[in-house]
Image (cartoon, rainbow, N blue to C red; front, side):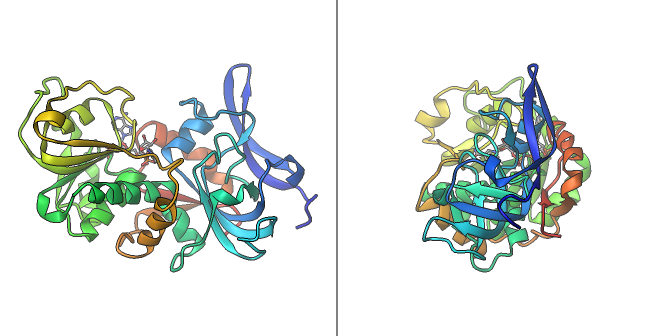
Length: 334
Ligand SMILES: NC(=O)c1ccc[n+]([C@@H]2O[C@H](COP(=O)([O-])OP(=O)(O)OC[C@H]3O[C@@H](n4cnc5c(N)ncnc54)[C@H](OP(=O)(O)O)[C@@H]3O)[C@@H](O)[C@H]2O)c1
């Protein structure tokens, strides 16, 4: 492909206050600055991508912007000595797909500091089946372990269980030997969650979130929370002594109305997980562990691959809490 050749991208624009996404022809001259030009093979769909593409969340900081916070592909050209043509690489988060043209594009140009060599043992497609969701689940586990979490401490609850981060966190934690409890809103997905390794499945509808005590029954040694709001407040109040919560998401709410009781009387910790801008040694360290002990055992089964042309049809499921597992987008890969 010559540098002047047009390629296809999914461009998100703001028009008269409304967010509009659509396929567009672009050229390399229109891409943002960066040292590494990549022929994109695969991208993925995260909750954040759906918020950005539909405007359900004001995620994008610069319009127009090619969506897609994740990408994997092959280096076409590099002005940075760390990468040479034909290297297989991945890039996730940072400003990608929010303030820098992202992965929903046949060609991407990315600052070298945001690019990683494809971790050994993963294909480009597997790397995108993990994507930001897998990196974030892995980072949460690494940070909780640093904080003393181990399987012998007791059960770990995962909320937003059928989603991308939730599914992968369940799989990884179960693989490490944790007793995982999946909290979901989807009654019909019990078998799916047990199949990923959850030992118990709890329905969100069964919780009495209207009456959360400052200190409830000590239950959880760890928690991976994708929801925020009342569910996170309930988790905080039911942590065991010295338990650790990884706060990842806000799928239910940005708010958190709780008391300090779990933190000062039970020594519970609330760890903030930010996959976007976390640096080394975490970035390459987590990706390495994703190829080793954190490698999900059901990655293929929980992932579905769609064609680039199908991309606009999947965003709504994320916004309406109907998403399940991970979606890989074959940009040039299939
Ligand atoms: N901090 C970070 O760096 C980081 C990185 C990645 C993602 N995130 C955040 O983590 C969350 C999960 O991301 P994801 O990509 O896994 O999303 P996802 O695939 O859409 O999964 C979210 C899951 O949460 C549950 N859910 C969705 N909307 C809900 C609502 N209104 N009320 C209650 N439950 C709801 C659903 O699972 P059930 O039906 O099974 O409950 C849904 O499948 C998002 O908020 C995302 O923005 C943060």
